[in-house]
Length: 259
Image 1 (cartoon, helix red, strand yellow):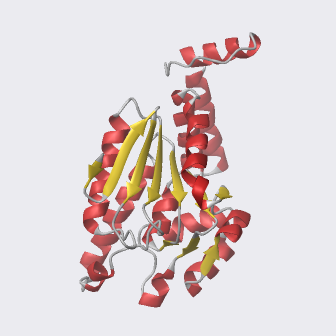
Image 2 (cartoon, rainbow, N blue to C red):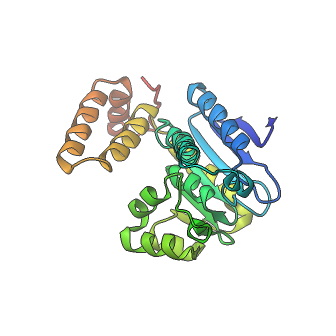
């Protein structure tokens, strides 16, 4: 289905969102609002188990619209701009369904912040990454200063953000910014394979894993362990847990019902 700046389709429990804002797939305000609306619909759509986000053409995305940035003249408007973008990316990170970024090309600024808000990232060999806001007299505003060090460590994130330099795909893999690097012509195929692998699991446990990991990153080890124990206990009362254990003991593939 085509809807404005994002193409979307659902097949076999996998939603594929393709950003189509040529030539650079800039994250304009209308595109972000559309992404927010589509994400909310997919969250409520019981058919959808996993979501893939990619870009159409040569770019995954070149970040925020420079015209929109140039129009910001006050700290109040600037802060509101940043918080709105952060809220939309937080919606993705805390969606409760796995979101995979299939990064088909350059992934710059706000587009890299979008990719980092996804739970998993697969990049094509042609992809590269940067946070160039420093060259505009700014800092990343959609979560880059917070998510990047959590993914690649404080020192490497500091270098990337302070220099505005590029990270090529192979380096992104070695430092943990992406999970996998593949040839561009099989990128979506590989993303779908990963989505199918996750989508075949019980979604109650998938959601609990995401919840435990996301919340654990923002708290102490003790609180994170307490959260894990509570989620583990809750899952022990589900039909899916009973089915999973029975299937293992009977040496068969489990048939989860998300109950």
